[in-house]
Image (cartoon, rainbow, N blue to C red; front, side, top):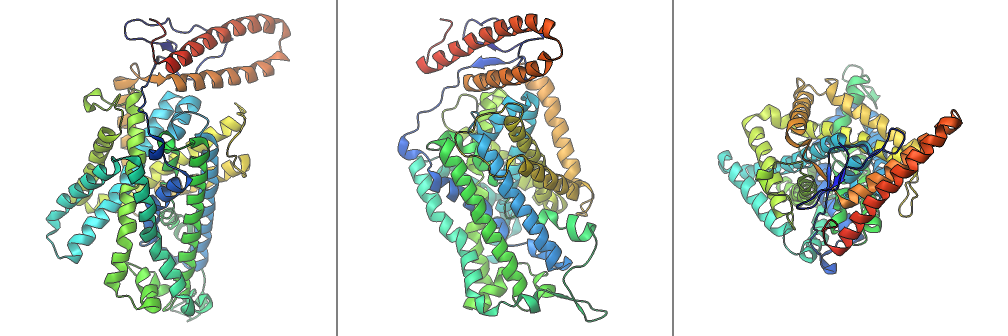
Length: 544
Protein backbone atom coordinates (compact mmCIF):
# COMPACT_ATOMS: atom_id res chain seq x y z
CA UNK A 1 0.00 0.00 0.00
CA UNK A 2 1.04 3.57 -0.74
CA UNK A 3 -0.10 6.88 0.62
CA UNK A 4 -3.49 7.98 -0.73
CA UNK A 5 -5.67 11.03 -0.20
CA UNK A 6 -9.04 10.17 1.36
CA UNK A 7 -12.30 12.09 1.34
CA UNK A 8 -15.39 11.45 3.40
CA UNK A 9 -16.98 9.29 0.73
CA UNK A 10 -14.31 8.56 -1.83
CA UNK A 11 -10.64 7.81 -1.99
CA UNK A 12 -7.99 8.63 -4.51
CA UNK A 13 -6.17 5.57 -5.75
CA UNK A 14 -2.91 5.04 -3.89
CA UNK A 15 0.11 6.61 -5.46
CA UNK A 16 1.92 4.30 -7.78
CA UNK A 17 5.63 4.22 -8.16
CA UNK A 18 8.22 1.90 -9.51
CA UNK A 19 11.31 0.66 -7.82
CA UNK A 20 13.19 3.31 -9.70
CA UNK A 21 10.99 6.19 -8.56
CA UNK A 22 10.98 8.05 -5.26
CA UNK A 23 9.05 6.33 -2.52
CA UNK A 24 7.83 7.61 0.80
CA UNK A 25 9.42 6.28 3.97
CA UNK A 26 6.01 5.08 5.15
CA UNK A 27 3.05 3.22 3.75
CA UNK A 28 -0.57 2.44 4.40
CA UNK A 29 -1.54 5.96 5.44
CA UNK A 30 -4.38 8.18 4.30
CA UNK A 31 -3.78 11.88 3.78
CA UNK A 32 -6.40 13.87 5.67
CA UNK A 33 -7.26 17.48 6.21
CA UNK A 34 -6.67 18.44 9.84
CA UNK A 35 -8.84 21.38 10.80
CA UNK A 36 -6.91 23.81 12.92
CA UNK A 37 -8.44 26.31 15.29
CA UNK A 38 -7.96 29.93 14.39
CA UNK A 39 -5.76 31.54 17.05
CA UNK A 40 -6.13 35.24 17.63
CA UNK A 41 -2.80 37.05 17.08
CA UNK A 42 -2.76 38.32 20.65
CA UNK A 43 -2.91 34.73 21.91
CA UNK A 44 0.25 33.67 20.07
CA UNK A 45 3.57 33.29 21.89
CA UNK A 46 6.52 35.57 21.14
CA UNK A 47 10.23 34.92 21.64
CA UNK A 48 9.99 36.19 25.22
CA UNK A 49 7.05 33.90 25.98
CA UNK A 50 8.84 30.83 24.59
CA UNK A 51 11.91 31.73 26.64
CA UNK A 52 9.82 32.14 29.80
CA UNK A 53 8.07 28.80 29.29
CA UNK A 54 11.42 27.04 28.87
CA UNK A 55 12.91 28.56 32.01
CA UNK A 56 9.78 27.96 34.10
CA UNK A 57 9.50 24.33 32.99
CA UNK A 58 13.11 23.35 33.71
CA UNK A 59 14.91 25.53 36.25
CA UNK A 60 13.32 23.89 39.29
CA UNK A 61 15.59 20.88 38.76
CA UNK A 62 18.65 23.01 39.53
CA UNK A 63 17.71 23.70 43.15
CA UNK A 64 18.06 20.38 44.93
CA UNK A 65 19.33 16.81 44.73
CA UNK A 66 22.35 17.04 42.45
CA UNK A 67 24.76 18.27 45.14
CA UNK A 68 25.19 14.68 46.37
CA UNK A 69 27.44 14.16 43.34
CA UNK A 70 30.04 16.44 44.96
CA UNK A 71 31.07 13.39 46.98
CA UNK A 72 33.18 12.37 43.96
CA UNK A 73 35.06 15.66 44.12
CA UNK A 74 34.69 19.05 42.49
CA UNK A 75 36.69 18.36 39.31
CA UNK A 76 34.84 15.27 37.99
CA UNK A 77 31.44 16.71 38.76
CA UNK A 78 32.20 20.13 37.30
CA UNK A 79 33.65 18.56 34.14
CA UNK A 80 30.57 16.36 33.80
CA UNK A 81 28.38 19.44 34.25
CA UNK A 82 30.27 21.29 31.52
CA UNK A 83 30.01 18.32 29.18
CA UNK A 84 26.27 17.92 29.71
CA UNK A 85 25.55 21.64 29.60
CA UNK A 86 27.38 22.16 26.33
CA UNK A 87 25.74 19.03 24.89
CA UNK A 88 22.32 20.52 25.61
CA UNK A 89 23.33 23.81 24.00
CA UNK A 90 24.44 22.00 20.84
CA UNK A 91 21.43 19.68 20.87
CA UNK A 92 18.98 22.57 21.16
CA UNK A 93 20.76 24.33 18.30
CA UNK A 94 20.32 21.21 16.14
CA UNK A 95 16.62 20.69 16.86
CA UNK A 96 15.93 24.42 16.63
CA UNK A 97 17.31 24.45 13.11
CA UNK A 98 15.08 21.65 11.90
CA UNK A 99 11.94 22.14 14.03
CA UNK A 100 10.58 24.74 11.63
CA UNK A 101 11.32 22.70 8.49
CA UNK A 102 8.38 20.33 8.93
CA UNK A 103 4.94 20.75 10.55
CA UNK A 104 4.66 19.49 14.11
CA UNK A 105 8.17 20.34 15.25
CA UNK A 106 10.30 17.44 16.46
CA UNK A 107 7.39 14.98 16.23
CA UNK A 108 6.66 15.93 12.63
CA UNK A 109 10.37 15.74 11.84
CA UNK A 110 10.58 12.18 13.14
CA UNK A 111 7.58 11.05 11.08
CA UNK A 112 8.67 12.73 7.87
CA UNK A 113 12.38 11.92 7.99
CA UNK A 114 12.84 8.81 10.15
CA UNK A 115 9.59 7.03 9.33
CA UNK A 116 6.21 6.39 10.92
CA UNK A 117 7.21 3.71 13.42
CA UNK A 118 10.23 5.68 14.73
CA UNK A 119 8.02 8.77 14.81
CA UNK A 120 5.41 6.93 16.88
CA UNK A 121 7.97 5.52 19.30
CA UNK A 122 9.72 8.87 19.74
CA UNK A 123 6.37 10.56 20.30
CA UNK A 124 5.54 8.01 23.02
CA UNK A 125 8.96 8.44 24.62
CA UNK A 126 8.60 12.22 24.63
CA UNK A 127 5.19 11.98 26.29
CA UNK A 128 6.69 9.58 28.85
CA UNK A 129 9.58 11.98 29.43
CA UNK A 130 7.46 15.11 29.89
CA UNK A 131 4.74 13.48 31.99
CA UNK A 132 7.42 11.89 34.18
CA UNK A 133 9.23 15.18 34.71
CA UNK A 134 5.92 16.82 35.63
CA UNK A 135 4.96 13.95 37.94
CA UNK A 136 8.29 14.17 39.80
CA UNK A 137 7.63 17.83 40.59
CA UNK A 138 3.98 17.24 41.51
CA UNK A 139 5.17 14.59 43.96
CA UNK A 140 7.74 17.02 45.36
CA UNK A 141 5.20 19.82 45.90
CA UNK A 142 2.68 17.49 47.53
CA UNK A 143 5.32 15.89 49.75
CA UNK A 144 6.65 19.29 50.79
CA UNK A 145 3.15 20.53 51.67
CA UNK A 146 2.25 17.50 53.78
CA UNK A 147 5.59 17.60 55.61
CA UNK A 148 5.55 21.34 56.28
CA UNK A 149 1.94 21.51 57.47
CA UNK A 150 2.17 18.09 59.15
CA UNK A 151 -0.77 16.74 57.21
CA UNK A 152 -1.52 13.06 56.82
CA UNK A 153 0.53 11.74 53.86
CA UNK A 154 -2.66 10.10 52.59
CA UNK A 155 -3.79 13.60 51.55
CA UNK A 156 -1.16 13.64 48.82
CA UNK A 157 -3.37 12.07 46.10
CA UNK A 158 -5.91 14.85 46.72
CA UNK A 159 -3.16 17.47 46.39
CA UNK A 160 -2.05 15.91 43.08
CA UNK A 161 -5.61 16.10 41.78
CA UNK A 162 -6.07 19.72 42.83
CA UNK A 163 -2.71 20.67 41.31
CA UNK A 164 -3.46 19.06 37.96
CA UNK A 165 -7.03 20.42 37.87
CA UNK A 166 -6.05 24.01 38.73
CA UNK A 167 -3.26 24.32 36.20
CA UNK A 168 -5.16 22.56 33.42
CA UNK A 169 -7.91 25.15 33.87
CA UNK A 170 -5.35 27.97 33.92
CA UNK A 171 -3.35 26.80 30.91
CA UNK A 172 -6.48 26.21 28.82
CA UNK A 173 -7.58 29.84 29.22
CA UNK A 174 -6.91 32.49 26.58
CA UNK A 175 -3.35 32.49 25.31
CA UNK A 176 -2.64 36.11 26.17
CA UNK A 177 -3.39 35.40 29.83
CA UNK A 178 -1.26 32.24 29.83
CA UNK A 179 1.74 34.06 28.37
CA UNK A 180 1.46 36.99 30.75
CA UNK A 181 1.33 34.45 33.57
CA UNK A 182 4.50 32.79 32.25
CA UNK A 183 6.34 36.12 32.08
CA UNK A 184 5.35 36.88 35.67
CA UNK A 185 6.07 33.38 36.97
CA UNK A 186 9.58 33.32 35.53
CA UNK A 187 10.59 36.00 38.08
CA UNK A 188 10.09 33.89 41.25
CA UNK A 189 11.50 30.91 39.33
CA UNK A 190 14.81 32.71 38.73
CA UNK A 191 14.86 34.42 42.13
CA UNK A 192 16.53 31.58 44.11
CA UNK A 193 19.53 31.54 41.75
CA UNK A 194 19.91 35.33 41.81
CA UNK A 195 19.68 35.62 45.59
CA UNK A 196 21.88 32.59 46.28
CA UNK A 197 24.68 33.59 43.91
CA UNK A 198 24.93 37.32 44.59
CA UNK A 199 24.15 37.44 48.31
CA UNK A 200 26.87 34.90 49.11
CA UNK A 201 29.71 36.63 47.22
CA UNK A 202 31.62 37.62 50.42
CA UNK A 203 31.85 33.94 51.40
CA UNK A 204 33.23 32.49 48.16
CA UNK A 205 36.47 30.54 48.58
CA UNK A 206 36.74 27.71 46.07
CA UNK A 207 40.39 26.96 46.91
CA UNK A 208 39.54 26.21 50.53
CA UNK A 209 36.02 24.81 50.33
CA UNK A 210 36.14 23.07 46.95
CA UNK A 211 38.58 20.33 47.94
CA UNK A 212 37.81 17.09 49.76
CA UNK A 213 39.85 16.01 52.77
CA UNK A 214 41.32 12.52 52.66
CA UNK A 215 40.43 11.00 56.08
CA UNK A 216 43.51 8.76 56.05
CA UNK A 217 46.22 11.24 55.10
CA UNK A 218 44.45 14.52 55.87
CA UNK A 219 45.50 15.69 52.40
CA UNK A 220 43.21 17.61 50.10
CA UNK A 221 41.98 16.08 46.86
CA UNK A 222 39.87 17.42 44.02
CA UNK A 223 38.78 14.08 42.58
CA UNK A 224 38.06 10.58 43.85
CA UNK A 225 36.87 7.27 42.45
CA UNK A 226 37.12 5.74 38.98
CA UNK A 227 35.27 6.20 35.71
CA UNK A 228 32.30 4.35 37.14
CA UNK A 229 31.85 6.29 40.36
CA UNK A 230 33.28 9.62 39.20
CA UNK A 231 31.62 9.78 35.79
CA UNK A 232 28.84 7.35 34.93
CA UNK A 233 27.35 7.25 38.43
CA UNK A 234 26.93 11.02 38.60
CA UNK A 235 26.07 11.76 34.96
CA UNK A 236 22.24 11.62 35.35
CA UNK A 237 22.41 14.29 38.05
CA UNK A 238 23.89 16.70 35.51
CA UNK A 239 20.73 16.59 33.37
CA UNK A 240 18.32 17.97 35.97
CA UNK A 241 19.18 21.54 35.05
CA UNK A 242 18.21 21.07 31.39
CA UNK A 243 16.00 18.01 30.97
CA UNK A 244 12.88 18.70 28.94
CA UNK A 245 13.98 22.01 27.43
CA UNK A 246 13.59 20.43 23.98
CA UNK A 247 9.83 20.27 24.59
CA UNK A 248 9.61 23.84 23.30
CA UNK A 249 10.16 22.56 19.75
CA UNK A 250 6.68 21.03 19.88
CA UNK A 251 5.23 24.51 20.44
CA UNK A 252 5.16 25.57 16.80
CA UNK A 253 1.35 25.57 16.65
CA UNK A 254 0.80 28.42 19.11
CA UNK A 255 3.83 30.61 18.37
CA UNK A 256 3.95 33.84 16.43
CA UNK A 257 6.17 33.26 13.39
CA UNK A 258 7.28 29.83 14.73
CA UNK A 259 10.22 29.58 12.34
CA UNK A 260 11.75 32.55 14.15
CA UNK A 261 10.28 32.72 17.66
CA UNK A 262 10.59 29.04 18.65
CA UNK A 263 14.32 28.68 17.79
CA UNK A 264 15.20 32.07 19.27
CA UNK A 265 13.21 31.49 22.45
CA UNK A 266 14.49 27.95 22.91
CA UNK A 267 18.15 28.87 22.38
CA UNK A 268 17.79 31.82 24.78
CA UNK A 269 16.21 29.53 27.38
CA UNK A 270 18.95 26.89 27.23
CA UNK A 271 21.67 29.55 27.56
CA UNK A 272 19.86 31.04 30.56
CA UNK A 273 19.69 27.61 32.16
CA UNK A 274 23.36 26.95 31.39
CA UNK A 275 24.53 30.18 33.05
CA UNK A 276 22.28 29.59 36.06
CA UNK A 277 23.36 25.97 36.50
CA UNK A 278 27.10 26.58 36.21
CA UNK A 279 26.84 29.52 38.61
CA UNK A 280 25.05 27.36 41.19
CA UNK A 281 27.63 24.57 40.88
CA UNK A 282 30.57 26.95 41.33
CA UNK A 283 29.04 28.85 44.24
CA UNK A 284 27.87 25.70 46.04
CA UNK A 285 31.43 24.34 45.87
CA UNK A 286 32.96 27.63 47.02
CA UNK A 287 30.87 28.15 50.16
CA UNK A 288 31.71 26.92 53.65
CA UNK A 289 31.75 24.49 55.34
CA UNK A 290 33.09 22.52 52.32
CA UNK A 291 32.12 19.77 49.92
CA UNK A 292 31.88 17.02 52.56
CA UNK A 293 29.01 18.86 54.20
CA UNK A 294 27.53 20.40 51.06
CA UNK A 295 27.18 16.99 49.40
CA UNK A 296 24.97 15.79 52.28
CA UNK A 297 22.47 18.66 52.32
CA UNK A 298 18.91 17.95 51.26
CA UNK A 299 18.63 21.58 50.11
CA UNK A 300 22.00 23.12 49.39
CA UNK A 301 20.45 26.58 48.90
CA UNK A 302 19.81 26.82 52.64
CA UNK A 303 23.47 27.42 53.48
CA UNK A 304 24.11 30.20 50.98
CA UNK A 305 20.84 32.04 51.65
CA UNK A 306 21.45 31.83 55.38
CA UNK A 307 24.98 33.22 55.05
CA UNK A 308 24.07 35.97 52.63
CA UNK A 309 20.60 37.02 53.75
CA UNK A 310 19.98 35.29 57.07
CA UNK A 311 17.12 33.23 55.68
CA UNK A 312 15.87 30.33 57.76
CA UNK A 313 15.85 26.86 56.16
CA UNK A 314 12.05 27.00 55.99
CA UNK A 315 12.07 30.31 54.11
CA UNK A 316 14.75 29.06 51.72
CA UNK A 317 12.76 25.94 50.95
CA UNK A 318 9.58 27.93 50.37
CA UNK A 319 11.54 30.08 47.95
CA UNK A 320 12.02 27.01 45.74
CA UNK A 321 8.34 26.10 45.55
CA UNK A 322 7.41 28.39 42.62
CA UNK A 323 10.15 26.82 40.50
CA UNK A 324 9.01 23.31 41.47
CA UNK A 325 5.43 24.16 40.58
CA UNK A 326 6.61 25.63 37.29
CA UNK A 327 8.61 22.50 36.53
CA UNK A 328 5.36 20.54 36.86
CA UNK A 329 2.86 22.65 34.92
CA UNK A 330 5.48 23.90 32.44
CA UNK A 331 5.35 20.52 30.70
CA UNK A 332 1.54 20.47 30.46
CA UNK A 333 1.47 22.55 27.27
CA UNK A 334 4.11 20.53 25.34
CA UNK A 335 2.78 17.12 26.28
CA UNK A 336 -0.77 18.20 25.50
CA UNK A 337 0.30 19.47 22.06
CA UNK A 338 2.17 16.24 21.38
CA UNK A 339 -0.77 14.10 22.52
CA UNK A 340 -3.14 16.05 20.28
CA UNK A 341 -0.80 15.66 17.29
CA UNK A 342 -0.57 11.90 17.79
CA UNK A 343 -4.34 11.61 18.20
CA UNK A 344 -4.90 13.56 14.97
CA UNK A 345 -2.66 11.00 13.27
CA UNK A 346 -4.93 8.15 14.52
CA UNK A 347 -2.12 6.91 16.77
CA UNK A 348 -4.13 6.97 19.99
CA UNK A 349 -7.29 4.98 20.86
CA UNK A 350 -10.43 6.66 19.53
CA UNK A 351 -12.22 6.05 22.83
CA UNK A 352 -10.19 8.91 24.32
CA UNK A 353 -12.07 11.29 22.05
CA UNK A 354 -9.02 13.48 21.42
CA UNK A 355 -8.86 13.38 17.63
CA UNK A 356 -10.12 16.47 15.84
CA UNK A 357 -10.34 18.66 18.93
CA UNK A 358 -9.77 22.35 18.23
CA UNK A 359 -8.24 22.89 21.67
CA UNK A 360 -5.79 20.77 23.65
CA UNK A 361 -8.00 20.61 26.76
CA UNK A 362 -8.98 16.96 26.34
CA UNK A 363 -5.43 16.02 25.32
CA UNK A 364 -4.06 17.78 28.40
CA UNK A 365 -6.55 16.00 30.65
CA UNK A 366 -5.80 12.55 29.22
CA UNK A 367 -2.03 12.94 29.32
CA UNK A 368 -2.25 14.41 32.82
CA UNK A 369 -4.20 11.32 33.87
CA UNK A 370 -1.17 9.29 32.79
CA UNK A 371 1.00 11.62 34.91
CA UNK A 372 -1.39 11.08 37.83
CA UNK A 373 -1.03 7.32 37.30
CA UNK A 374 2.75 7.70 37.60
CA UNK A 375 2.22 9.60 40.85
CA UNK A 376 0.05 6.77 42.20
CA UNK A 377 2.60 4.09 41.29
CA UNK A 378 5.37 6.19 42.84
CA UNK A 379 3.34 6.67 46.02
CA UNK A 380 2.71 2.93 46.33
CA UNK A 381 6.28 1.99 45.40
CA UNK A 382 9.00 4.25 46.85
CA UNK A 383 11.58 2.33 44.82
CA UNK A 384 9.76 3.20 41.60
CA UNK A 385 9.55 6.83 42.70
CA UNK A 386 13.30 6.86 43.32
CA UNK A 387 13.89 5.74 39.72
CA UNK A 388 11.15 7.78 38.00
CA UNK A 389 13.62 10.51 37.15
CA UNK A 390 15.97 7.94 35.62
CA UNK A 391 13.13 6.53 33.50
CA UNK A 392 12.63 10.03 32.13
CA UNK A 393 16.34 10.33 31.40
CA UNK A 394 16.50 7.00 29.54
CA UNK A 395 13.58 8.11 27.37
CA UNK A 396 15.21 11.50 26.86
CA UNK A 397 18.59 10.07 25.81
CA UNK A 398 16.93 8.01 23.07
CA UNK A 399 14.99 11.06 21.87
CA UNK A 400 18.11 13.25 21.86
CA UNK A 401 20.09 10.86 19.70
CA UNK A 402 17.20 10.20 17.30
CA UNK A 403 16.23 13.84 16.81
CA UNK A 404 19.85 14.77 16.23
CA UNK A 405 19.99 12.01 13.61
CA UNK A 406 17.08 13.73 11.90
CA UNK A 407 19.12 16.93 11.89
CA UNK A 408 22.04 15.09 10.28
CA UNK A 409 19.77 13.66 7.58
CA UNK A 410 18.38 17.08 6.73
CA UNK A 411 21.92 18.47 6.51
CA UNK A 412 23.33 15.59 4.44
CA UNK A 413 20.87 13.25 2.71
CA UNK A 414 18.16 15.83 2.07
CA UNK A 415 20.30 18.98 2.03
CA UNK A 416 17.47 21.28 3.10
CA UNK A 417 18.18 24.96 2.55
CA UNK A 418 18.29 26.76 5.89
CA UNK A 419 16.53 30.10 5.67
CA UNK A 420 15.91 30.66 9.37
CA UNK A 421 17.97 29.70 12.40
CA UNK A 422 21.07 27.65 11.59
CA UNK A 423 23.07 25.69 14.13
CA UNK A 424 26.61 27.08 14.35
CA UNK A 425 27.92 23.69 15.51
CA UNK A 426 27.21 21.73 12.32
CA UNK A 427 27.54 17.99 11.90
CA UNK A 428 30.44 17.82 14.37
CA UNK A 429 28.10 19.14 17.04
CA UNK A 430 25.62 16.38 16.25
CA UNK A 431 28.32 13.75 16.74
CA UNK A 432 29.11 15.31 20.12
CA UNK A 433 25.45 15.07 21.13
CA UNK A 434 25.41 11.40 20.10
CA UNK A 435 28.46 10.68 22.24
CA UNK A 436 27.02 12.38 25.32
CA UNK A 437 23.60 10.76 24.78
CA UNK A 438 25.26 7.33 24.60
CA UNK A 439 27.17 8.00 27.81
CA UNK A 440 23.95 9.14 29.49
CA UNK A 441 22.09 6.03 28.36
CA UNK A 442 24.91 3.76 29.56
CA UNK A 443 25.04 5.54 32.92
CA UNK A 444 21.59 4.11 33.67
CA UNK A 445 21.44 0.98 31.49
CA UNK A 446 24.91 -0.04 32.69
CA UNK A 447 23.78 -0.41 36.30
CA UNK A 448 25.70 2.58 37.69
CA UNK A 449 22.67 3.98 39.55
CA UNK A 450 22.07 1.04 41.88
CA UNK A 451 18.38 0.82 40.97
CA UNK A 452 18.40 -2.93 40.22
CA UNK A 453 17.66 -2.15 36.59
CA UNK A 454 14.18 -0.77 37.28
CA UNK A 455 14.62 2.27 35.03
CA UNK A 456 15.90 0.46 31.95
CA UNK A 457 13.53 -2.51 32.37
CA UNK A 458 10.56 -0.14 32.77
CA UNK A 459 11.55 1.68 29.59
CA UNK A 460 11.97 -1.57 27.65
CA UNK A 461 8.57 -2.81 28.82
CA UNK A 462 7.06 0.52 27.79
CA UNK A 463 8.64 0.24 24.33
CA UNK A 464 7.45 -3.36 23.89
CA UNK A 465 3.89 -2.47 24.87
CA UNK A 466 3.87 0.54 22.54
CA UNK A 467 5.31 -1.55 19.69
CA UNK A 468 2.63 -4.22 20.09
CA UNK A 469 -0.04 -1.53 20.22
CA UNK A 470 1.38 0.10 17.09
CA UNK A 471 1.45 -3.17 15.18
CA UNK A 472 -2.06 -4.30 16.05
CA UNK A 473 -3.78 -1.07 17.05
CA UNK A 474 -2.86 1.72 14.67
CA UNK A 475 -0.48 0.54 11.94
CA UNK A 476 -3.22 0.27 9.30
CA UNK A 477 -5.34 3.20 10.47
CA UNK A 478 -2.75 5.94 11.01
CA UNK A 479 -2.97 9.05 8.86
CA UNK A 480 -0.84 11.99 7.78
CA UNK A 481 -1.89 15.59 7.44
CA UNK A 482 -1.60 17.31 4.09
CA UNK A 483 1.34 19.34 5.41
CA UNK A 484 3.14 16.16 6.49
CA UNK A 485 2.38 14.58 3.13
CA UNK A 486 3.95 17.50 1.30
CA UNK A 487 7.07 17.18 3.48
CA UNK A 488 7.29 13.43 2.92
CA UNK A 489 6.99 13.95 -0.83
CA UNK A 490 9.70 16.61 -0.81
CA UNK A 491 12.11 14.50 1.23
CA UNK A 492 11.41 11.41 -0.90
CA UNK A 493 12.24 13.27 -4.10
CA UNK A 494 15.42 14.69 -2.59
CA UNK A 495 16.55 11.29 -1.36
CA UNK A 496 15.75 9.64 -4.67
CA UNK A 497 17.60 12.29 -6.68
CA UNK A 498 20.68 11.79 -4.56
CA UNK A 499 20.56 8.02 -5.07
CA UNK A 500 20.00 8.50 -8.79
CA UNK A 501 23.08 10.68 -9.06
CA UNK A 502 25.15 7.94 -7.46
CA UNK A 503 23.84 5.29 -9.85
CA UNK A 504 24.16 7.46 -12.93
CA UNK A 505 27.88 6.98 -13.30
CA UNK A 506 27.60 3.18 -12.90
CA UNK A 507 24.97 2.30 -15.47
CA UNK A 508 24.12 4.95 -18.05
CA UNK A 509 22.07 2.67 -20.29
CA UNK A 510 19.65 1.57 -17.58
CA UNK A 511 19.47 5.08 -16.18
CA UNK A 512 17.68 6.26 -19.31
CA UNK A 513 14.68 4.05 -18.56
CA UNK A 514 14.96 4.73 -14.89
CA UNK A 515 14.93 8.46 -15.50
CA UNK A 516 11.76 8.16 -17.62
CA UNK A 517 9.95 6.15 -14.97
CA UNK A 518 11.10 8.42 -12.15
CA UNK A 519 9.89 11.53 -13.97
CA UNK A 520 6.43 10.02 -14.39
CA UNK A 521 6.39 9.00 -10.72
CA UNK A 522 7.47 12.44 -9.53
CA UNK A 523 4.87 14.17 -11.73
CA UNK A 524 2.16 11.86 -10.41
CA UNK A 525 3.11 12.52 -6.80
CA UNK A 526 3.42 16.26 -7.42
CA UNK A 527 -0.13 16.40 -8.80
CA UNK A 528 -1.43 14.70 -5.67
CA UNK A 529 0.41 17.15 -3.44
CA UNK A 530 -0.87 20.14 -5.42
CA UNK A 531 -4.45 18.88 -5.11
CA UNK A 532 -3.97 18.42 -1.36
CA UNK A 533 -2.53 21.90 -0.93
CA UNK A 534 -5.36 23.50 -2.94
CA UNK A 535 -7.83 21.52 -0.88
CA UNK A 536 -6.25 22.78 2.34
CA UNK A 537 -6.34 26.40 1.15
CA UNK A 538 -9.99 26.22 0.00
CA UNK A 539 -11.12 24.19 2.99
CA UNK A 540 -13.05 21.85 0.67
CA UNK A 541 -12.66 18.26 -0.50
CA UNK A 542 -10.69 17.91 -3.73
CA UNK A 543 -12.72 14.86 -4.74
CA UNK A 544 -16.09 16.49 -4.60
